[in-house]
Length: 190
Image (cartoon, rainbow, N blue to C red; front, side):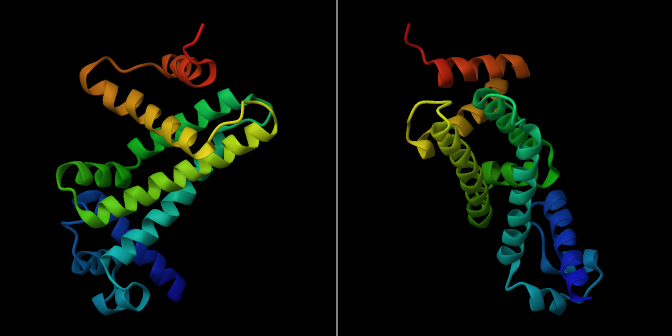
């Protein structure tokens, strides 16, 4: 029973954050959407930040699951890395909550939201780092600092998908894969 209530609260909060943003959401709104008393929320969560953190933690699991589904164990690291990164960013852009939170960070710089988005990015980087470590051990890619490489891979994807589109025609999935291969897997040297 209490697990159902907790889930109701989390779902209501996610919906409210998606619609109004984190800053504009009140505990009263969440309670109303969850059909519980405001006090009930506090039996599960210390405050609104705690609630946001719980939502983002489950979001991280969803994103990792999406990335895993995009990969094929019979494919090379380069192809799987592209497929996973593309799926991760597609998920981030299409998921209403992450889209709203990213918008709130850009427009308002809400500290609590910056923190959870940082947590989200760090979890994605850690996930990619683990995949890089496996590829190094298998001899698929040369030895490198896996954490820096994971960071650069994620930031490159964000730049190619999000930032590039601000002033240019969007790149196709194939063009992004080619650029990824050129810069990360082949390098620029002749």
